[in-house]
Amino acid sequence: MSLTVMVLLSVIILLALFVPFLSHKVEQELEAFLFVLGVAAVSITGAWSWELIKHALKEPIAISLAVLITGLLFSKFKDKIVNLITFFEKKFGLKTTVFFIVFFLGLISSVITAIIAALVLCEIIAALRLNRKDTVHIIVMGCFAIGMGAVLTPLGEPLSTIVTGKLRGAPHYAHFFFLFNLLWKLIIPGLLAFSMLAVRIDGNQHNDELALMPVESAKDLAIRAGKVFLFVMALVFFGKGLTPLAEATIMKLPSWALFWANSISAILDNATLAAAEIAPAMTNSQLVYILTALIVSGGFLIPGNIPNIICAAKFKIKSKEWAKAALPCGITIMLIYFVILSII
Image (cartoon, rainbow, N blue to C red; front, side, top):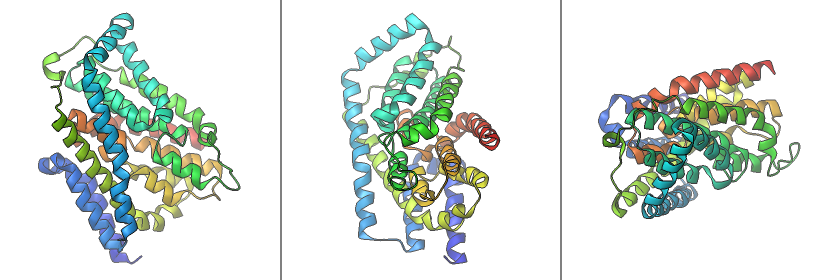
């Protein structure tokens, strides 16, 4: 890869990181902006192919349909959901309810998929009718938990599917519970941590006027599903275009440096990075370093994970708003993991 290509791809990364924070217009049209950057990245590296185009058109279908169908189902059963959540809130208290919602969805996301877990989180938090600040805080912590928990089985998200597939042969012979056995001692405490962080809210302030969301029409749900479709297409192109840069730089770093370098997962699909970095020759220690960094930093910014994208679209959370809620907690948790991994 030439120096010119490396520089141009680096510029694209910087644009993806900073422009949404600087331009309100770009923030409103983030899906289209990332799509343009993804197309540019693929063009710069000359990676266009019919296979890539077919993959980019196929990959978002299941996610978009899940968003649309689940949204329609929740709209139909909205009253029953609200009554159920209200019952739990009155019986156990708001903070206890929030804690178990975040922990349970994070844990079960490895079975029902991160997408469905994120959609359920959206509807439950909407039913709680909290003020805007508390709503955003819980959503962000919930997405961190879902992104972490989903990695425990190959069913949870593309990252775990790709890693299990790449390590199926010698020397790891990865099976269905390989990632669970490798990571559960780190993931479960992480889920508990984000669940406890989620209850750092003013539980006495319910503000229906600010938080009660209008009933979404079928048209609204279709538009949201369409935006998710475009966003996933953008991530496919973005990941493909930036893979050569990742292979030329990140893959050559030692484990401790890989840990921090993989914070680029905040804007680049972590499954793409895993596909580029993970190799059967890696030790379990190297795998833990890489995977822990990918799943934690995936919660830093909206493009970092599919649950982030779904929830941000549902609640119209802006890039600055997400970063303000996510970065302090996320970076602290990542630093704690780094210290733990360095010691053991």
